Amino acid sequence: MPQHPKPERITDLSRLKAFTNPLRMQLYRLLYAAGTATASQLAEQVDQAPSLVSYHLRKLAEHGFVTEAGARSADGRERWWEVTSEEGWGYRESDLAGTPEGAAAVGAVNRVLVDSRAAQYRTYLDQGAAWGKEWTDAAFSAEWLLDLTPAELAEMSDELEALARRWRKRGKAAKAAGDTEGREHVSVHLYGFPFRP
Image 1 (cartoon, rainbow, N blue to C red):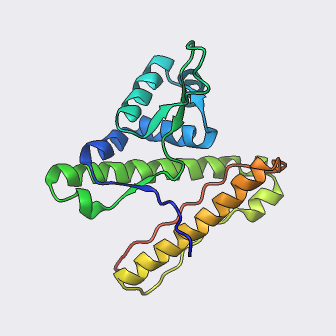
Image 2 (tube, rainbow, N blue to C red):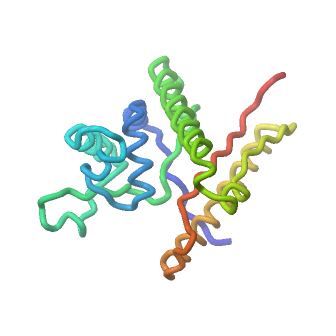
């Protein structure tokens, strides 16, 4: 079976701390979706000053999450940015939360992620009617209550990641072939965690 690139696994706490700032998470997501953008373009989307956005982009670049989009920045008047890896990044709490500082940073980043994902979903819910029947019928929200072991949950996570990777590849290939009619960015949020009722 062919190996697929995986998201970069962050094991350095100082890198993870770059995302304790909610604006940096928002800028990273917008840049990931756009492919390339300038600080001015991103500033308009987040309603912040271009100088502030530029500062946060440079911080993300210091930690290796974004880089200058060389081909677009050729004229020197505007810096174009792109994410460093199309595969994104991830982390394991156990790699980083072994100290009080690490636990605090992991907790902060987890909360930024949950808050930004919830805000993104609330925006969709607020705008649902504007998307039309085809999109609202296709969108989903689901919850399943399963009885699993940690190993089974990890296996399910790997399977879901492979499934999402397959659909991302399919969408990119279609866009590259010029099939853009009706194609939009789609965000899929899945969580799997233990709980006791």
